[in-house]
Amino acid sequence: MEITYDYYRIFYYVATYQSFSKAAKILMSNQPNITRFINNLENQLGCKLFVRSNRGVQLTQEGRKLYQHVSVAYQHLHMAEVELMNEQRMDQGYITISASEIALHLLLLPVLEKFHKNYPGIRIRLLNHSTPQAVQAVKEGAVDLAVVTTPLTVKKPLRSAVLMEFREILVGSQATVQNTKIKRLEDIRNEPLICLGRKSTTYSFYSKFFLEHDVVLEPDIEVETMDLILPLILNGLGIGFLPDLYVKDLLKSNQIQEIRMEEKIPAREICLVENHNFPPGVAAETLKRMLLKENGII
Image (cartoon, rainbow, N blue to C red):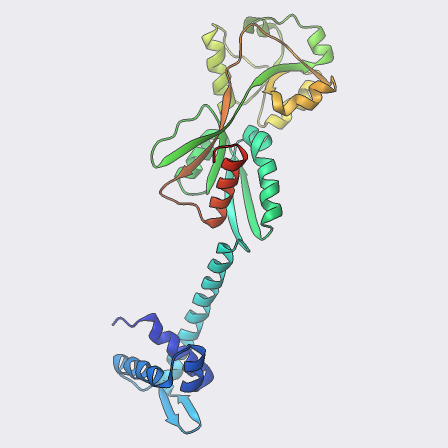
């Protein structure tokens, strides 16, 4: 038996207000139509749902049983409609984003600040992942979007878009730089190098870069997050590669210094990754457009 939602909706209002005329007014219909719908519902269910009288209507025993279920279902549906309307208006909702650490610091944070200011009702869940972890999360539909750094490999149904390009430089504390004689990559062998861990995209990037110049990447200190590299450098524990935009203020204040080398470090990119099998909701789509607009893509 397949009964339309409209029949149950009309039944809900007639039962709630115990009146065909009141239900008709709320539903912007007329009493004959409401009466016809209720008669059709009773015929399909094979039982009487209301006892009619001059003072209105009352539920029968069967009607009361049906109302217990319909009222709960209708309220849930109404709540869902309200939630969807609020999401369309960006009054509420949530976004889950995966971001690699460099992408977070160089690009995502200022955009998130602007997004949160414009849409305070949207809750944000931010996951700190390596690029491979972030791509896997998008593939599984565990996150709406990922903002990550290259090197990056995606296959359909995933799609990536370049948001910005950035460069990294080799830096150290003033004391460390004064005592180094680094001019080429091979000279780094004699200096304490601080690097992100072996599972990171950054490690893979520099491992390849070193091998292209016949040098093996052998860091003295490996850390889990980029935020740990800078304090270690400032405290004279070694040298490390960091994005120039990330350390520009420290360079200006002479807290750290750049170590210039003959080999040019290739540029890297920050990319947006999404899954066409899991289209983003309104909130995620809005953030996506903000990211693209912020970087001149649209």
